[in-house]
Structures are given as structure tokens and as C-alpha cells.
Amino acid sequence: MDRPRRSTRPPARLADAIPSSPPPATRPKRKTPHDADPAEQLHVLLTSPKSVLTTLDISDLISASSWNMLSDESKNILKPLLPPTAFLGYNATIGLDHPSAVASDSMTVDDSPASDVVDPAVFTDPHFLAAAHTLQDHIYSGWMDDTHAQKVLKYEEGIRNGTLAALWKDEVWERNNDGPRPVAEIPINGNSIPGDARAGHAAEVKLVALAQEGVLQVGDIIVLRRNFTGLDIVVEKDAIIRSIHPKTHALTILLEPGTSTHLPGPLLSPHPAAPSGLTQQAVVTSPSQLETVLLDNDGRVERGKRPNGNAWKVMTVWRWRGTAPWEDVGDGRWGRENHGTLFYLRGTYYHER
Image (tube, rainbow, N blue to C red; front, side, top):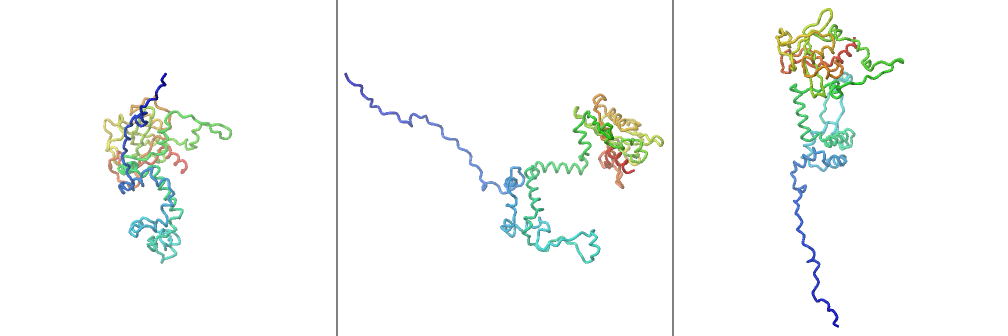
């Protein structure tokens, strides 16, 4: 019987048994710091919240040794940005309004540096380091980027042209806390009294008393501004004091019908004209009564949907200040300025009388 013969066929190679894989995808070459635009790189370094400047020790970057590494041309560019105290030979002076300045006739006040050599100790001065750390915080918080700069520019322009005004803290609180509020009980001399008493005895002063004492005057504009957050409605409406009754000191006010905010120009001048047929008139003796008149006239918020609030805090008084020009400046109030809320004026009158 013949024995089985061993196969003479060569074995398959391992490389042929493994299926071929596609070549790896080529990634785009990353841009090295040398390829980036130096101006763009500097802009990102000084404005981006992810800048490396926000993580390093600023005293290692801005120091006397790094200053000495700069060229004379670079130093001359940076020197005007430094205060006079950063140069050698600076002599501290006092202002002309200081009492010691009167005794010395020969003393001159000069803040110009005595030399153009920078004092190396300025880089370790606590004031300098505090300013450098503040810069780091501003970069990290995003206050140096272009978006924030546009917001600041828009705010500044709004303040200048009168289309934007910084809200009083009372108005901000009312906007964020609109709705029924619990009244806390405050123990005084063993007795509990409502939390409204925190206004003190100034709460006893009535609106007619402010008119009697000249805190409110004819020609003042009382502005109601109330934010109904639940309804997404902001009511802002002006009422001008046309007259004050000589005996009862009740206020006769003029207001425009509907959702109009401002009054017509002829009613706002120092010598107002007679009201037209559309202008409405009302007599009020309290802030809550005035608020009800203005909201009813506006008509957007029904009485049943008005949360309880403090009418003294949602109305401000606008009046001309000193020798301000009495003319139409395009702000709808003929250049009058905000003198504060009725709540503020009442408290000030009570404590100063």
C-alpha cells in the first residue's frame, strides 16, 4: 500500500492573503506660525479669549529684561504710552488746589518726565502688575474682541443721541421681579408690621404734599415705564403737569390717547399752547391713581392682568435743569432731564425737610 505523498504546491504568501487597503487620506498642511499674517496673529493674541496671554505669567513677558531686548526704535514708540512715574528722575508734585501749594509761590506743577530713561522698577510695581492682570482678565472675558467693541460703540452712540439711557436700578429690579410679591413681617418693639414700613416714615408723605412743597412743579413731565414680563409688553407714557390746585394741591395732567408715548411739542414748551381736541386731561392726587389713568388710557393691559406693584417706583420726574435750553431737541421732552423716581424724590424730601 502506497503512502500518501506530501503536496509539493508552495504555500500562499501572507502578503497575498491580506487584502490591500486604500492609501491613507492626505490631510491639508497646517499653517505654521511662520505662514500666518503677523498683523492677524497679533490681533488674535490681543483680543481672543483663547489667547496665550490669558494663561501665562504676565510678569515673565513684560519685565525689565524684555524691555532691554527691544530696539531703540521700539522703545521710542512705547515710551509715550507710559505714565510720567515710569521714568527715572520723576519728582512727585501736588496739585494747585492743595493747601501747601498756596504757601510756595515758586512751586510749579509739571508732570513731564525728568528724563527719557525708563525706571526698571516700574515693571515690578504693584500698580503696574495690577493693570497688566486686569488686561489679562479683559482679554479672557471677551471684552477686547470686535463683537464687544461694536456693542460698546453702539451704547456710546445711543447715549449721545438720546436713543438709549442707562436704567435706574429700581427700573431694572421692577423688570426682573414683576409680579405679586410677599410682604415680610418686620418685628419692631415686639410688634410685627408689614414690610412696606421699610420705606420709613417717608411713606407718610403724599403726592399732594410734594406738589405743595414744590418738589413737583407745573411743567414737569411724569413718565410711567412699566414692564409686564408675562405679557411681553412695555408701557411707557408721558403726562405733563398743567396746573396744581391752590388749595387741594391736586395735579391736573395732560396725556395723549392710545399707545402714544410723548406729548405734542406745543404742550412741552415753557409757554405751552392750549391742548388740542385729542389731548386728554385728568386730575390725580396719588401715584396709583395716576398709574391707573395712564394704563387705562394706553389700553393694552387690562386691570385684571396688572400685577401689584409700587407706583412710586415706576414713575420718574423729568424737568429742565438750571439754564438748560428750552427748545425741542428731538427727545420728545424738550431737553428735560431725569430727576429720579417719585420714590426717590419723596425720600429725599422727607430727610432734608
